Amino acid sequence: MITESIIKDLEEIVNRGLEDAAIPYAKGKSIRIKQFVIRESSKGFLIYNSVENKQVARTQFKSTAVAIAKNLALNNDITNKVLSIDNTLSKHYNDALFYKHMIKKSLNNDIKDIRRIRLDISIAKSAELRKDLDRFIYC
Image (cartoon, rainbow, N blue to C red; front, side, top):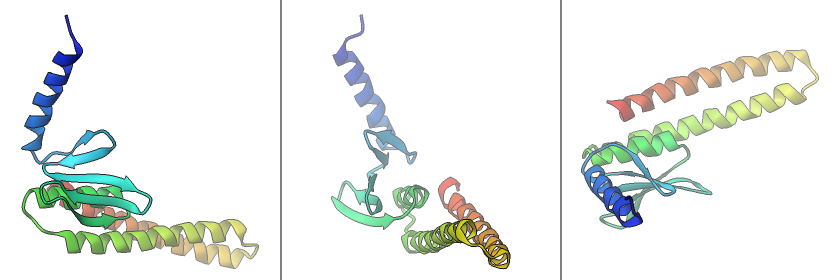
């Protein structure tokens, strides 16, 4: 017979084992990697160190937050590098939104062609930056 207390005990055992591993796991509305917690807010993704009870960083994208938290959990402080990538990625994301809007609203075909080229450049740069982030996450 499975009871609520058995389920809670099993969940505590599993969570206790995951706290020592440097793999992300979701607990409630947050993502935990060892002692680091990632929470979504209206201003982006916030990374907290639960041992010191202080905010480590704030990012625009979840993948950059995971990269920072994972590397901090492994004692690699790459926060400044990843925040730089996050800022550049945010710039290209906003540029892409602007170019899409201009393509949709513009009546001049020459302007549309120029904006399509710039949109392609922003998408290519964003893909490049995502590959850089993937190296920080998966390596």
